[in-house]
Image: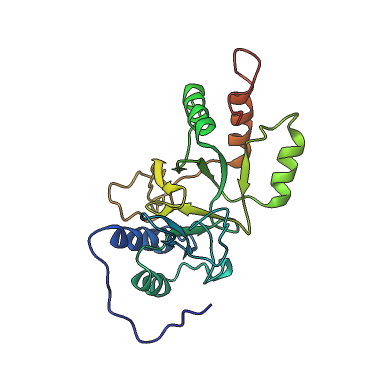
Length: 243
């Protein structure tokens, strides 16, 4: 990791995307305890205002949307480190290191994702946050282990091939980032809840954006079952979640 804490550089954040990314990173890291780090980002490439990945690979498959320096293992919930990163790289994408105690995710191609959400809503399935890019939609779920995921997949007769799983050792780009694929946004914003009161009462939805607990997340098993059911419910016998 090349960025070493030392003399703090002058903050160069305007009222635009830089401030929004820093605020989002601090919310994830400090209020929700989600480990984050900056993505590699974009840089000018060629002419006509074109931009490509800032990494050395001219044929990068996910331009701007992956860790580079620092690497994924540097992900942290430390506010001081987060401020250092985004004060020096205000336009860097916001990456969540998935797994461990952090959220995991299931993702689908954007068209299949939109169909899936509509069908899950019809089924009455409660969803957590949903991240949308022009190419893929990601449904955040509670942390799971690779062993449990393997058991869940083994129990299914069939799983849509368009599904991808983001677990331990993976990462996910969060809003309000911009990558080579386009703008990243919340299709379903995080549902913020407060912790139960001292008397053991039920959690109460927080009215303030400064939540005192992480957003609610569904169980991966329940969501996977619902997605498989939604996929198999196409009237022509095909899959609603086909790529």
